[in-house]
Length: 108
Image 1 (cartoon, helix red, strand yellow):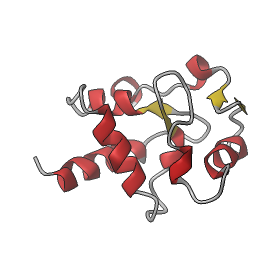
Image 2 (tube, rainbow, N blue to C red; image 1 turned 135 degrees about the vertical axis):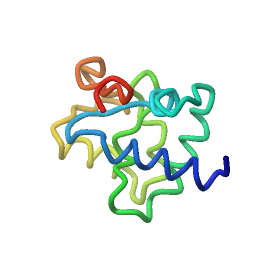
Image 3 (tube, rainbow, N blue to C red; image 1 turned 120 degrees about the vertical axis):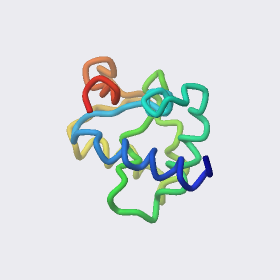
Image 4 (cartoon, helix red, strand yellow; image 1 turned 120 degrees about the horizontal axis):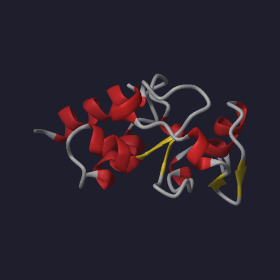
């Protein structure tokens, strides 16, 4: 499978993440049957910033850390986007991560 095809599959899952919820790179990879491809999901998210319909700000690492924040324009854009959806972030860490975590293969 080409990277482009994989990226499109990643974007299809990311577009399903509900407003006010987050998921992880690994959860998306697992939902796509590519559990060891979390890093590639991260690359797809980094490449998605020109697409308005891919909510890359809702994808974080497995511990709820905003590891992708440096790929957004502006210092705190990722955090601001999350906070605008009611998600609380302190020191780059999502508060109540387990409560707002969206499991793609279970909830999609």
